[in-house]
Image 1 (tube, one colour):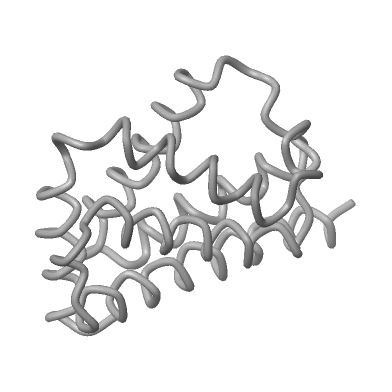
Image 2 (tube, rainbow, N blue to C red; image 1 turned 90 degrees about the vertical axis):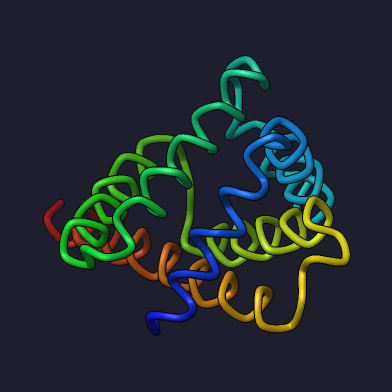
Length: 140
């Protein structure tokens, strides 16, 4: 990601902090609208699941300036998600659901520049998680 895109992601995520629960709720609403079959993958308390999602995004945002550590974190997350039943096709939907949720929460502040930075960030997240899952599958 470019420096400006990292700064945009960081600042817009900080801006969304007061609406964190809205972001989490919107994400799952979008995801289940895109793929109702994904609902059984999330069998824990929805509030707790939303907190985990927000913690993961915050950790990834915090590591934007440290790409090796960020990639390691995301690949580890991808390996863990194999055990939850997540398949490669789910990742595209997760990225799309997150992008739509961000647009909803940011509203008019979600400019084309902000949208592009987040789409790039979502692609990075999903690519690294897929790489981690593939690594685990190859080792099996």
